Length: 113
Length: 112
Image (tube, rainbow over all chains, first blue to last red):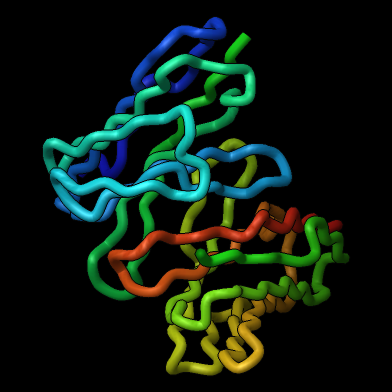
Protein backbone atom coordinates (compact mmCIF):
# COMPACT_ATOMS: atom_id res chain seq x y z
CA UNK A 1 0.00 0.00 0.00
CA UNK A 2 1.96 3.02 -1.28
CA UNK A 3 -0.61 5.63 -0.20
CA UNK A 4 -0.33 8.82 -2.26
CA UNK A 5 2.58 9.13 -4.67
CA UNK A 6 3.71 12.19 -6.61
CA UNK A 7 6.21 12.66 -9.42
CA UNK A 8 8.52 14.37 -9.96
CA UNK A 9 9.97 15.37 -6.58
CA UNK A 10 11.74 18.41 -8.04
CA UNK A 11 11.28 20.32 -11.28
CA UNK A 12 12.73 23.46 -12.82
CA UNK A 13 10.83 25.08 -15.68
CA UNK A 14 11.38 28.10 -17.82
CA UNK A 15 8.64 30.72 -18.08
CA UNK A 16 6.10 29.66 -20.69
CA UNK A 17 6.83 25.93 -20.53
CA UNK A 18 4.08 23.48 -19.70
CA UNK A 19 4.21 20.32 -17.63
CA UNK A 20 2.11 17.81 -15.75
CA UNK A 21 2.53 16.90 -12.10
CA UNK A 22 1.49 13.32 -11.52
CA UNK A 23 -0.47 12.07 -8.51
CA UNK A 24 -1.72 8.57 -7.79
CA UNK A 25 -3.32 6.83 -4.83
CA UNK A 26 -4.03 3.17 -4.14
CA UNK A 27 -6.57 3.56 -1.33
CA UNK A 28 -9.62 3.75 -3.64
CA UNK A 29 -10.52 7.21 -2.31
CA UNK A 30 -13.03 9.13 -4.38
CA UNK A 31 -11.98 12.56 -3.11
CA UNK A 32 -8.64 13.98 -4.24
CA UNK A 33 -7.22 17.48 -4.22
CA UNK A 34 -4.22 19.60 -5.16
CA UNK A 35 -2.68 22.27 -2.93
CA UNK A 36 0.17 24.69 -3.30
CA UNK A 37 2.21 25.72 -0.30
CA UNK A 38 4.00 29.04 -0.13
CA UNK A 39 5.75 30.54 2.93
CA UNK A 40 3.22 32.26 5.21
CA UNK A 41 0.30 31.32 2.94
CA UNK A 42 -0.49 27.86 4.21
CA UNK A 43 -1.99 25.24 1.95
CA UNK A 44 -4.13 26.78 -0.75
CA UNK A 45 -6.54 24.58 -2.67
CA UNK A 46 -6.04 24.63 -6.44
CA UNK A 47 -8.51 22.03 -7.73
CA UNK A 48 -10.33 19.07 -6.29
CA UNK A 49 -12.28 16.04 -7.49
CA UNK A 50 -15.07 14.08 -5.83
CA UNK A 51 -14.75 11.15 -8.22
CA UNK A 52 -13.76 10.05 -11.70
CA UNK A 53 -15.01 12.51 -14.29
CA UNK A 54 -15.81 15.22 -11.72
CA UNK A 55 -13.52 18.15 -10.93
CA UNK A 56 -14.02 21.61 -9.45
CA UNK A 57 -12.03 24.74 -8.75
CA UNK A 58 -10.53 25.60 -5.41
CA UNK A 59 -9.18 28.92 -4.12
CA UNK A 60 -6.39 29.48 -6.68
CA UNK A 61 -7.24 27.62 -9.93
CA UNK A 62 -5.91 30.09 -12.51
CA UNK A 63 -3.08 28.72 -14.64
CA UNK A 64 -3.81 25.09 -13.75
CA UNK A 65 -5.92 22.34 -15.30
CA UNK A 66 -6.93 18.96 -13.92
CA UNK A 67 -8.72 15.87 -15.14
CA UNK A 68 -9.85 12.69 -13.39
CA UNK A 69 -10.27 9.78 -15.75
CA UNK A 70 -9.70 7.10 -13.09
CA UNK A 71 -10.18 6.87 -9.33
CA UNK A 72 -6.43 6.35 -8.87
CA UNK A 73 -4.93 9.25 -10.84
CA UNK A 74 -5.33 13.01 -10.56
CA UNK A 75 -2.75 14.89 -12.68
CA UNK A 76 -2.23 18.66 -12.43
CA UNK A 77 -1.25 20.52 -15.59
CA UNK A 78 0.54 23.84 -15.71
CA UNK A 79 -0.44 25.38 -19.02
CA UNK A 80 2.20 28.13 -19.35
CA UNK A 81 4.47 28.30 -16.32
CA UNK A 82 5.04 31.65 -14.62
CA UNK A 83 7.48 32.59 -11.80
CA UNK A 84 4.44 33.10 -9.52
CA UNK A 85 3.84 29.34 -9.77
CA UNK A 86 7.11 28.59 -7.99
CA UNK A 87 5.89 26.61 -5.00
CA UNK A 88 5.64 23.23 -3.34
CA UNK A 89 2.68 21.25 -4.65
CA UNK A 90 0.90 18.62 -2.59
CA UNK A 91 -1.65 16.13 -3.79
CA UNK A 92 -4.00 14.58 -1.22
CA UNK A 93 -6.73 11.97 -1.06
CA UNK A 94 -9.42 11.88 1.63
CA UNK A 95 -10.91 9.00 3.57
CA UNK A 96 -14.66 8.85 2.86
CA UNK A 97 -15.58 8.20 6.48
CA UNK A 98 -14.73 9.90 9.78
CA UNK A 99 -12.22 11.15 10.62
CA UNK A 100 -12.06 12.18 6.92
CA UNK A 101 -8.28 12.19 7.12
CA UNK A 102 -6.43 13.69 4.16
CA UNK A 103 -3.41 11.66 3.10
CA UNK A 104 -0.83 13.87 1.47
CA UNK A 105 1.75 12.89 -1.09
CA UNK A 106 5.43 13.77 -0.53
CA UNK A 107 5.15 16.97 -2.57
CA UNK A 108 6.74 18.38 -5.73
CA UNK A 109 9.05 21.37 -5.43
CA UNK A 110 8.64 23.45 -8.59
CA UNK A 111 10.83 26.38 -9.58
CA UNK A 112 9.93 28.56 -12.55
CA UNK A 113 12.71 30.81 -13.83
CA UNK B 1 -16.70 30.65 0.25
CA UNK B 2 -15.06 29.46 3.44
CA UNK B 3 -12.23 31.53 4.90
CA UNK B 4 -10.07 30.31 7.79
CA UNK B 5 -7.90 32.62 9.84
CA UNK B 6 -5.24 31.39 12.25
CA UNK B 7 -3.25 33.08 15.03
CA UNK B 8 -0.49 33.47 15.95
CA UNK B 9 1.64 32.95 12.86
CA UNK B 10 4.66 32.11 15.03
CA UNK B 11 4.80 30.86 18.60
CA UNK B 12 7.81 30.15 20.79
CA UNK B 13 7.44 28.37 24.14
CA UNK B 14 9.72 26.83 26.73
CA UNK B 15 9.75 23.06 26.96
CA UNK B 16 7.05 21.94 29.40
CA UNK B 17 4.86 24.99 28.86
CA UNK B 18 1.53 24.96 27.06
CA UNK B 19 0.85 26.23 23.55
CA UNK B 20 -2.46 27.50 22.20
CA UNK B 21 -3.30 28.15 18.55
CA UNK B 22 -6.59 29.78 17.60
CA UNK B 23 -8.61 29.65 14.38
CA UNK B 24 -11.79 31.26 13.14
CA UNK B 25 -13.93 30.24 10.19
CA UNK B 26 -16.51 32.13 8.17
CA UNK B 27 -18.97 29.52 6.86
CA UNK B 28 -21.45 28.56 9.57
CA UNK B 29 -22.27 25.40 7.59
CA UNK B 30 -18.78 23.97 8.20
CA UNK B 31 -19.04 21.02 10.56
CA UNK B 32 -15.66 19.32 10.63
CA UNK B 33 -12.41 20.85 11.84
CA UNK B 34 -9.13 18.94 11.53
CA UNK B 35 -5.65 19.96 12.67
CA UNK B 36 -2.52 18.97 10.76
CA UNK B 37 1.12 19.00 11.80
CA UNK B 38 3.89 19.50 9.27
CA UNK B 39 7.47 18.89 10.27
CA UNK B 40 10.23 20.57 8.28
CA UNK B 41 10.53 19.09 4.80
CA UNK B 42 7.70 16.61 5.35
CA UNK B 43 4.07 16.30 4.36
CA UNK B 44 1.20 17.44 6.62
CA UNK B 45 -0.31 14.77 8.87
CA UNK B 46 -3.58 14.75 10.79
CA UNK B 47 -3.12 14.99 14.56
CA UNK B 48 -6.63 15.59 15.85
CA UNK B 49 -10.06 16.63 14.63
CA UNK B 50 -13.39 17.74 16.01
CA UNK B 51 -16.92 17.63 14.68
CA UNK B 52 -19.49 20.36 15.20
CA UNK B 53 -21.62 18.32 17.59
CA UNK B 54 -18.73 18.13 20.07
CA UNK B 55 -17.33 20.99 22.16
CA UNK B 56 -14.01 19.47 23.15
CA UNK B 57 -11.83 16.49 22.28
CA UNK B 58 -8.61 15.33 23.92
CA UNK B 59 -5.87 12.94 22.87
CA UNK B 60 -3.06 12.67 25.41
CA UNK B 61 -1.27 16.06 25.43
CA UNK B 62 -3.36 17.51 22.61
CA UNK B 63 -6.87 18.93 22.91
CA UNK B 64 -9.15 20.84 20.59
CA UNK B 65 -12.10 23.03 21.56
CA UNK B 66 -14.88 24.36 19.36
CA UNK B 67 -17.25 27.29 19.86
CA UNK B 68 -19.79 27.02 17.05
CA UNK B 69 -21.60 30.19 18.01
CA UNK B 70 -18.46 32.28 17.76
CA UNK B 71 -17.04 30.17 14.90
CA UNK B 72 -13.81 29.68 16.82
CA UNK B 73 -11.76 26.55 17.42
CA UNK B 74 -8.45 26.12 19.19
CA UNK B 75 -5.60 23.63 19.55
CA UNK B 76 -4.05 23.18 22.98
CA UNK B 77 -0.76 21.36 23.49
CA UNK B 78 0.30 20.76 27.09
CA UNK B 79 3.72 19.80 28.44
CA UNK B 80 5.34 20.74 25.15
CA UNK B 81 8.40 18.83 23.98
CA UNK B 82 11.04 19.72 21.36
CA UNK B 83 9.48 17.21 18.95
CA UNK B 84 6.30 19.32 18.99
CA UNK B 85 8.23 21.95 16.98
CA UNK B 86 6.51 22.12 13.59
CA UNK B 87 4.00 24.10 11.56
CA UNK B 88 0.39 23.49 12.59
CA UNK B 89 -2.56 24.04 10.26
CA UNK B 90 -6.21 24.24 11.15
CA UNK B 91 -8.86 23.55 8.53
CA UNK B 92 -12.61 23.65 8.04
CA UNK B 93 -14.98 21.70 5.81
CA UNK B 94 -18.67 20.83 5.52
CA UNK B 95 -18.67 17.14 4.68
CA UNK B 96 -16.25 14.44 3.69
CA UNK B 97 -16.88 15.30 0.04
CA UNK B 98 -16.42 19.03 0.31
CA UNK B 99 -13.33 21.12 -0.20
CA UNK B 100 -11.01 21.50 2.77
CA UNK B 101 -9.85 25.05 3.40
CA UNK B 102 -6.73 25.52 5.51
CA UNK B 103 -5.59 28.37 7.70
CA UNK B 104 -2.21 29.98 6.95
CA UNK B 105 -0.39 27.97 9.62
CA UNK B 106 1.40 28.54 12.93
CA UNK B 107 5.11 27.85 13.28
CA UNK B 108 5.65 26.47 16.80
CA UNK B 109 9.13 26.37 18.31
CA UNK B 110 9.68 24.54 21.61
CA UNK B 111 12.87 25.71 23.29
CA UNK B 112 14.64 23.03 25.36
